[in-house]
Image: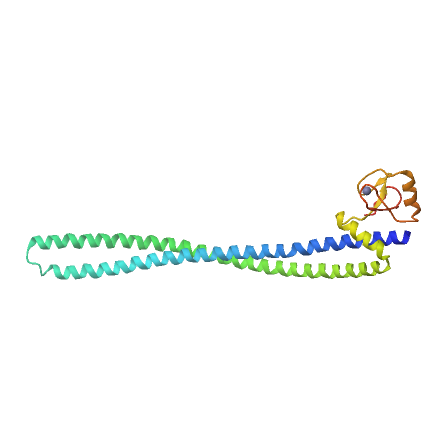
Length: 240
Ligand SMILES: [Zn+2]
């Protein structure tokens, strides 16, 4: 029985290690997703800055186009003005031409302002692209690091599961299924030591006779409080 109990303890060590490895393995895709999410955020920033630049360029081109159109209109009116017969008509057309010139002048100012802001937008695009390059390079290094970490964890897990399989082969099937059942119901801890006269799992005080029986190790005994299997490892020693 003592051998069985020590195998159970070993099995529990392997199981806990396997659980820990699985938890670590499960966390990795989340980390990878976060890294890739950071890349997407910066990518969206680049797209936004480019859109801002394009919108500004379009506003400037529209204004330039309108300046050209007004130029044509002004020239057309100036050509027609000399054909007018009366001073009144001439003066009215002068006012019309002046209004168009004023409009053109406003638009030209607008073009200059838009050119200034365009420089800022170009700068913002460059900065975002630079950040994108840096974040992408960092992400690529980080994801390959995470990939190799995951591969390492998987290899460790495989090794632990092989060791576990070798252990379970040596265990009596009833004891093995009892262990599995308790482990499932008790958050992975099925075997506990006696600690200061109590169950090391739920801390229920154990009768002296039971402690003695556990110490002798002639049979497998469970705690009446939590149902976990009790082992002797020198009262108070840490075995789990
Ligand atoms: Zn207990």
